[in-house]
Image (cartoon, rainbow, N blue to C red):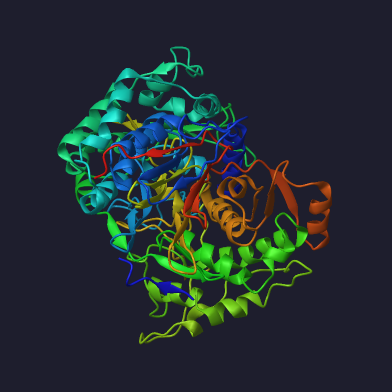
Length: 633
């Protein structure tokens, strides 16, 4: 049963090209292990004995969080340390110049809360921000490079808000590891080097070129000791002065200067051009459009607490983020649409199970594209607010009507958004007008980490600069996001407004889906999440199904091959399915493409004996650690 827990406090082509580059730099041959949890031993750990667990996308970030947990810091303290290091060693995916969503659970206080650190558009932003002189949507590469795509960063304010409520150690302490690492240097990882070698346009930023590349424009090699004194200074400034020192003063001034300084950009005229290839004589150089961000935009940014969006799947309560993330609603819709089917009997990886996942996903993604956006800044349609729309989209009767459209033997010909208005209880007057679907490219990047501390407090946090290396601009030692390209480039369709259109102060729609799950008795059962653009939702859905329906442990659930439909077309993970499975899906009408799907799932599950079982995604550089608290706070 759906609930908002009141008691528990261009475009598509270009983003596919981006995904291909990410996938080429994705997989590890073998997942790293730690001394605390060697491969030959169980990954299990007692949940109530001071045992902690952390899983994240880079071993250095995991160690930074683990150091805090060993010393008795809370899950939120460890999240700060982890994020600060990820922004240094995995700048292609997340950082202090971006945003994040956090789901937090405290078992002693019986509190479940979510924190919204999503970026906002500058006050000067208008709905036509990503339209060209002819009123047509820009190509993605035209929009993303430079200040036009940069939103006001939200991660630092969000972390400070969470720390004020649930931090144990002093605010300054979790930042010290990142400051020292930035000053002393870290070795460039294989994935970072691979992406630096493939993303041409990063070199167009003088600060990024000087930092990541040598004098000849070649990326520093794998293993190179990379130092970032500017980032060390930024981190120490935040540690000493709090979030206010980030949103005002020299750091804020550096961000505004980077966003508003005109630079040169490449306009790729060829329709089939790879968005990151070097320009040719067929391409034109034009001045970049400044982003229009002001010091007031930064000073006025506020992180928000939001009520979690939760729903029941086979008596398990699955909780995630409300809008502006579409992740929680879409994830729950897919699960609820599938509940009438015997997924356990179908079996993991079967034609029947994959077909049902694809069909449920197509229905849910159609609703997502048309209805979901920033609940605080999106004008009500026919008097219906975003909160009312969410309630309608997750209403059991609406779900039943949508699920009845699924034919177990054949693919639906066409899938449009439904009409949830009849399933909404509202006093609002006016006729239902609806929205038109938007056209956000939303390329795959981002990072996720999951933490449980020695007291059983949990953080499931997804964090991002949006595209690979964000806007490709740097300020104060950090990559700046390109989050505004998560808005729809078209503000209207055939005269009908798009819910996710650009507006000043508005938060762009996201797919981030950090999840915490409770068992039928209401006890903590699992936490998980992933990067991956709009495919995030599919990655997390697959993992939840594997945990609940197919009774897998966390690592096999993470490893299970992916099936996603982020933009209508069905993608199966390359090498994960044999020809017979693909033929079976094609016989049911699916047009199948196989490709590397570079998720970054990280999570844990609580076994019936109270033992923690964790996992990290081998498709990136993910790893995990577990151990005991030295000094419990």
